Length: 356
Image 1 (cartoon, rainbow, N blue to C red):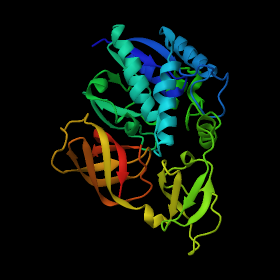
Image 2 (tube, rainbow, N blue to C red):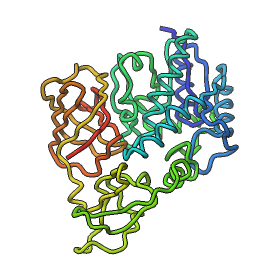
Image 3 (cartoon, rainbow, N blue to C red):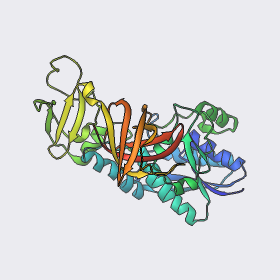
């Protein structure tokens, strides 16, 4: 069936090949680049970011090669509000957000999809590495590039209007295809890190937004072992950059165990103290082939992007999601997503509120 497809083109190789495949499949494809920065840089810094003028030009050139119409949509104000400000406020509250996940949820598959449907498009195509069959989301065969985790927050309705043309391909295959198609982005480095922090200095970015807020670093007994300039500069499981005055009595490394924004206190301790066997989560989205599990459901869970997968039993109670892990997990941070799978199929997600 011929569909009207809006292809989101970041200027990278994945979105370019995704648009080309959608067009080759016989769909009526229009390319769109999302301008997410009010003052974009002219050029990328290595593989950092995806929102520069250079990227918009790369996207336009790819659309010309494919032979599809191309537009630029200004999403800077929405991106600032729903992604950047959310990122800052989450850190200020002692949580660790995932801005890529939030961008997919609020920008690509809410703001963009809503506009696309209003304009008469049937679907939005992106270059995500994930499989989508009959509205059911599954992992990519390229384990190292799988992006089903950051798409796990999408609703069934949003997935019903999504298209992931790269679903069955590895990254190596995508680059080879781009070269065959004459797309200049075939060898362009992948974007990584946080696109709106071009220099990669997250702590510096937050300090400029939130200012300095000196406070104590304490051990599990409450003894002060160091100080910091802002609790927002830490995340659970962090080992480096703690600036602790003296080593632990046993000489082993210390890790961030918790962040308390009200008292502005960071608690550190041994790696063993990071281990948790239960996770509590909120704001669930059930988007897979099974209904919300009001009885314990045996499945697997991924607790951070590209993180380890754990066997678990998940159960919904009211607005809460209780997750009992089969084996202990470490570095589980509030604010991250817990994405649930049956084998490789996503069944839902929720936002981590705490762990023990």
